[in-house]
Amino acid sequence: MSNQLSALYTELVIEHDKRPLHAGLREPFDTEVHHVNPTCGDEITLRLRLAEGGERIEDISYDAVGCAMSRAAASMMADLLIGRTIEEVAPAQDHFEAAMRSRGRLEGDEDLIGDSIALLGAAKFPARVKCVLMPWKAYQAALVEARMLGA
Amino acid sequence: MSALSREFDVEAIRADFPILTRMLDPDTPLIYLDGGATSQRPRQVIDAEVAYLLHDNAAVKRGAHRMAGLATDAYEGARERIADFIGAPSPDEVVFTKNATEALNLVAYSLGNGDDSTPARLRVREGDEILVTEMEHHANLVPWQELARRTGARLRWIPVTDDFTLDLTDLGTLVTERTKVIAFTHQSNVLGTVNPVAALVEAARAVGALTVLDAAQSAPHMPFDVAALGVDFVALSGHKMLGPTGIGVLWGRYELLAELPPFLTGGSMIEMVHMDRSTFAEPPARFEAGTPPISQAVGLAAACDYLDALGMERIAAHEQALTQQALTGLAAIDGVRIIGPAASPSRAGAVAFDVAGRHPHDVGQVLDSLGIEVRVGHHCAWPLHRRFGVHGTTRASFSVHTTAAEVDAFVHGVAHTIDFFGSLS
Image 1 (cartoon, helix red, strand yellow):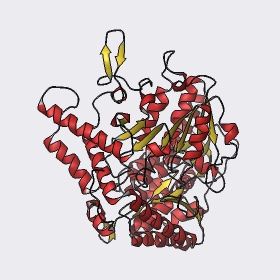
Image 2 (tube, chains in turn green, blue):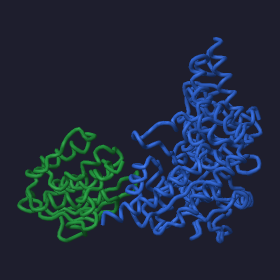
Image 3 (spheres, chains in turn purple, cyan):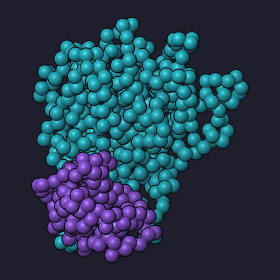
Image 4 (cartoon, one colour):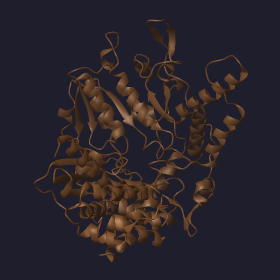
């Protein structure tokens, strides 16, 4: 049982939860989205700033209220995405979501998803998958909105 | 009461719940403390439902064959049993719904469905007021918000004090000549607070308002008698009282049901149907459109038998003792803040708490690793959590089969949770 727990609350998760990277809402930004997990009341406000004609992620800033898993997920995601192009990060996004939804069958590729590999322990707990994916869903929505606005 | 009385012996009770013997891991037995979300079912309830399906199953209230008669007898027998369980003067006051939420929606919709032929008392219109409380489950809040939105009525609410009880200080100004409905929970699903029904009924009667009681959390845990409570409508949940999912109950005073317009319409609820209009059956049929949950009604009747055999007074005393034990144990842990009143005879067995600001999902995860199943989050009472400045809480709720040893394990588990997260920093 403690094995299960230590697979979830890894050192990296605890570190990102305690000292989240890129946290706080910053200017300038192109789009801002607010996502809620209605089952537990977790919330994230996420701002996206694009550069280079909308091809590069210049900044992701956020305010996340939630469990350790969801807060760590936001921190890891922001750290992974900032500075990279949307094209570069698309495979990471797809891979991470597929691994999180695989109930533990899919092993993660650390080269693709970086620290987020530490979140995959949650894939075996269906109730926690939503927590972990919420920041990613917020990023996706912010990106769609930014594209619609032609940012 | 048709049920035979039996001794309140927790070990014997536990033997009736096969699920309690399952293991979550090879060395982790199940400690189920989430009856407030859904109760486990004793073998007697499961057997009753299976026996009906194996021997008597057919559509009710239609067809002339013998099986239809057997099924109808089983279904109507269940209605009588439930009427008896809640002290209803007549089984015709018992409407089967799919759950307590639908029962509350039934009232909220029907009160907005009237026309000029509907008595004014049963018709919510623009300028009217609907009074709820700040501690409602979403099921007894959102339907009233929506009724207000559809009709132009005004929604008001009774606030909650820092002591986790209803603040009745301004009841005199909250209840006005315009108040049509006062809808409130009997027992908060989060706080465990049992509300002063008599005071609210008196305030409602003084202005001719209807009272709607959400009894989903109370009826399974204490002696419950609609006639003594004096309210006009009561909503119950089958699966929170050892019964099946897919069935709830709306009880209403017959003279009110008799004049209330329908909510859902269709088969089984009509009197005459023409191409351009219909007339409706008398209650309870008027409020049971379509084929009802028949085996579930049979199961719910068996749950009433089971509860009555144990005795609601003894169930309340058992859960009261466990609640005191849990509150005392939790109060001794540094960092635990109980969101609910101190132990008292009017405080029921839902114990919600905050653990050192830790997110309840994280708390629940650690408790789950110990086999302790509790509810985490806002428990469908988001405004109430906002009122106390927390995003969510962890909630343990106690049942007939809960033992003092389980409550001990739970209290130790909460202490362990604090140690666990402390050790990670």
